Amino acid sequence: MGSDLRVPVDPLVSTGWQMLTGGVVLLVAGVAAGEPAHVDVGRFSANSVWALAYLVVVGSLVAYSAYTWLLQHAPISQVSTYAYVNPMVAVVLGWAILGEHIPPMMLVASAVIIAAVATIVRNEARTRRARDAALVSPAPAPTAAPR
Image (cartoon, rainbow, N blue to C red; front, side, top):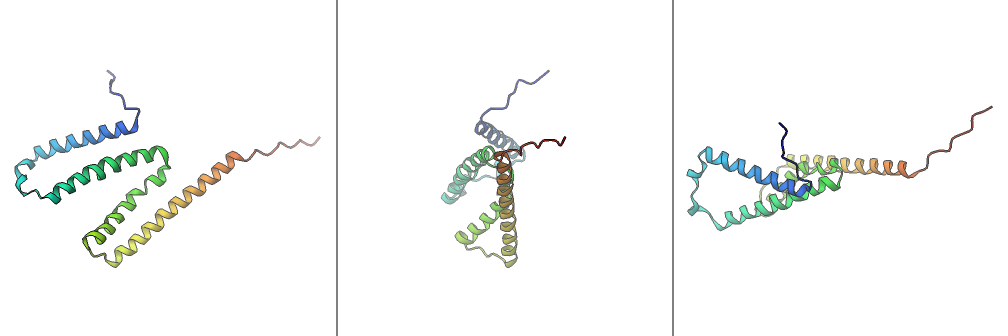
């Protein structure tokens, strides 16, 4: 009773299926929760439609595809740092574009996050250099046993 469902070989195809499946599940959940009754298309503004289009294209298609590509081409420890950096990017964009206030504690927390990410990236590079050097350097010649 095995399954005939196979995982796509191409990671980007797999990403597409994941996004499509997630969208369908959320659509079904939204309909089941009665969300369509609360939608008033007449209240949509041009800004909100453009924001949704931006989130679909840049926030989902481009960003998730780039993440999938990075998983194939970069160390996982470096790729995972996006989870720490993305919220800081959002805070900076909110400050720069919307004029939002950034409390001093958030600046301190951001500095700690940047230091941690820099440490991860630096240690990963150091480990990779040491591993590459060990692979390149010849093994020591065997010494003759005394007679």
